Image 1: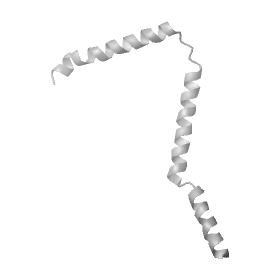
Image 2: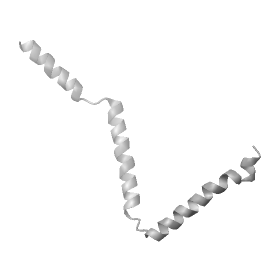
Image 3: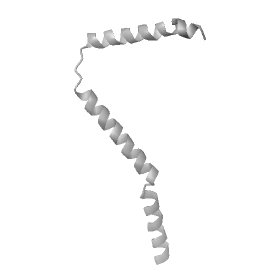
Image 4: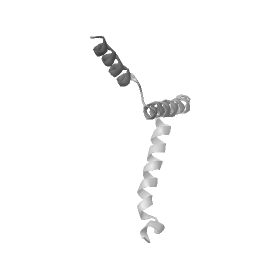
Amino acid sequence: MNIGKKNFSLNLNILNEKTQFEKLEENMKVSIFGVLYVLLKNQDFSVWVELIFVILQLLQFMAFPFSPMVISF
């Protein structure tokens, strides 16, 4: 009976332990989201400024297919 308990606790420890890849993945996610949070928390654009940026970006995307360099391919 004692051997069964040891095997059960060993299996639980294996399931709870993270692999090196999982630790690396979690650290990368935390780092990326931390940087994004710091960068975005200080931005205080109004709705109109955001709308102007969106329209400019849309115009850039629409103009790209008609560029002479793209058409020549």
